[in-house]
Length: 189
View 1 (cartoon, rainbow, N blue to C red):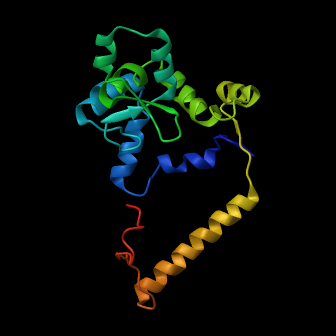
View 2: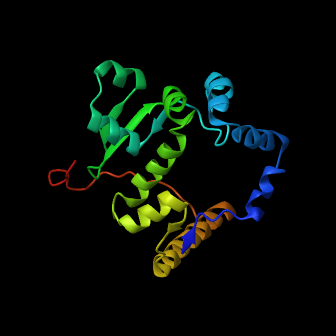
View 3: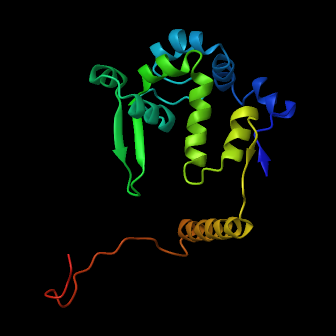
């Protein structure tokens, strides 16, 4: 499946995005990155396009770059650089959101960082260079879709919705149970 193709029909939401506030936010999000970040987003502390707070930002691409360059500690501290490892042992890199946006997303590095982060997320587990090159050079992305897995997900979602419906109608009760085992000397805590 090829995705990332921008058709004119997708741009209809720039005319009206459901409310005056969301339409204004979306139009302001299309301003040149330097002006948008320095004049609007940085003082407001929010990204205009996504309406997220500029608290912490994750970037695997920039994090790997900083790890490779190994700049002085003062620069890392100013950026709010933190490297953490998730439960699966994968590295997660995070930064102070305001400073990261001001430095990397407000001018010529913005496209490189966003494309690099998307590539880091999508191609880290399966580094297929042909797909990564197609994505980086054209914006087109190739995705494999497992129809059996999609059907299982849809079934699980539907079962969850039906259970929630039964609880709302009073036909079923949902709760958490706490009990003490009869034989406490064999219990594992």
